Length: 386
Image (cartoon, rainbow, N blue to C red; front, side, top):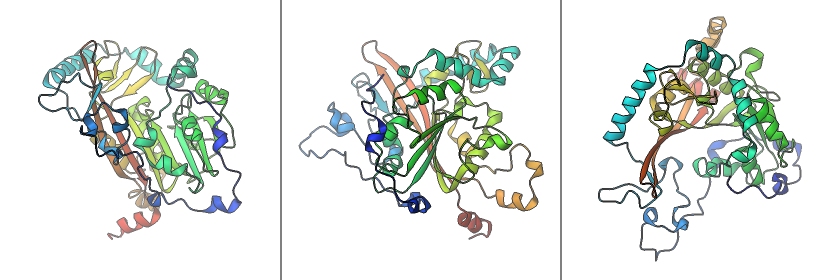
């Protein structure tokens, strides 16, 4: 595991603010993060992306740039451990297609498919039972990929409610709190595994003044569609880091609807997950394919690998396509027809990782996005043609 936290996350928290602070609306568009980590040594003759000096590659100004170490003709691919924006070569593409064909030929049996889909929380409970919190690495890269998280933890930031969906062992929530100086920030860490919630609550940094952990299924229906302790339109930021892929495709629309429901107008979803063609997908053997791009791992947990256009369609579609949509009034249907998420950013992060000692190349693919719940004013403008 990477460096563990050495102090309680509450040490950097300010004393309680006045009650008026919680009434201040959070305008995410005004929050900016100044990049203080750009290289300033003009005497460095090597371009930053070619330098072996770790100080030269700490940060980038555009989070969706996904790095700048490009593999060019004549480069020694094994000079660095990773290269950015590397498209898969023809050999890998052919190999991947052969693997996909073999996977489809030996799918999960109908019996096992029903077993894995009927109670996914069972398999995640076993996963967290068998893997203690020391198994997981803290996500130190989050602030770089989503600078707004650093902005919201500043002393001067407004009161903020963050919902993390699929919080796991707390390896996102606790690093955020460890750096937090915003006395009005609180994280609701939810997971549909009760064992994961137990792991979070057992952490020495767990303090319900600043973090609350609950069992919640993001694809819950009806009264179960909102997380415990949160009301409709009460959340500023939703974190979804490698969680959407754990849902089956028939749960996506309901999950998106629930996230839309809990967010404030103008609130954002920070999203990162697996992309189609990732090495993890190509490596699957027989008996793991459940449907196209959807697999079950050896431990019983499920994973889906997304296309960029597929995610854009899922997150920008109408809320009407949910369970019970036929019961929605005509007036609500007209409003909901323009109540989709606005896609602020959506990009493919392709990287070539290499094992320099064994001379192995590994293609990784992730998708990253920022989706904003449209405000009432924005929806009204769209519906009137403005």
